[in-house]
Amino acid sequence: MKENKDIRFTSSRIRLIAYWVTTGIIALETGVGSVWDIMKIPFVRTILEQLGYPSYMLTIMGVWKALGVVILLAPRFPRLKEWVYAGLVFVYSGAAASHLVIGHGADAVGPVIFVCLTIASWALRPPARRDFAPLVIRGEQGASTIITSSRGNRIAYWVTTALVVFQLGSGGIGDILRPSYLLEGMTHLGYPVYFCVILGVWKVLGALAILIPRYPRLKEWAYAGTIFDLTGAAASHFAIGDGAGKLVFPLLFTGITIASWALRPPARRDLAQR
Image (cartoon, rainbow, N blue to C red):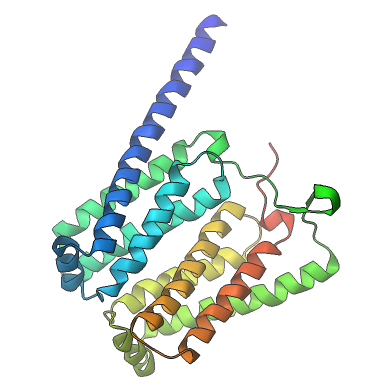
């Protein structure tokens, strides 16, 4: 009995050490990267130019990374941590795919390694940083109430979710097929046309993840990716000086996506009780 306890203790300790090692590496790379991106140092500017992305993308990514590091290292907030891990995987896998597309296969190795480190950190998290509790709202006199799935909430959920899934699915297929009008829009924003395919694949997978039953953790990643895409689109239009009209669609769907996320029934939102 004592030997079993010792083995479990040793295993837990090794797991915790491995978690902090991988998380420390990820946090350091992301934190330093956020400063470099915001400062737009020559090193990162050169990489972005080689990949064909606009320089203003560095500011967008830098802000996201800075927020991500804070959330990643802070105690608790496991649901937000899912969004951070999702964002990091999107960034690293997107970087790897971009390098491969332009024929810089060797440069894709680094991002792939960081994808693996991110997944390792995600998988090794202790329960307090991994298992998110049911969403609650504050009632009268500060009482907490679990968000329930009333008839009205269910209708609102499916209406908003249908809009989100349609936007992701149709947009993703369009991105993959790359019609001329979409390529013109991407070029207008300064992004490489191959980025359409990367976005398209992510969008289609996100639509499927949101639509299928259960898998609440996977849905957090899908909602996170959708918010990153929409807010990134709005920020891109703003960065190049497009008028307010260009910001309406991404910001409107950001609100719809948040509504769908918040209105999910428990089976699509909360982890199963163990």
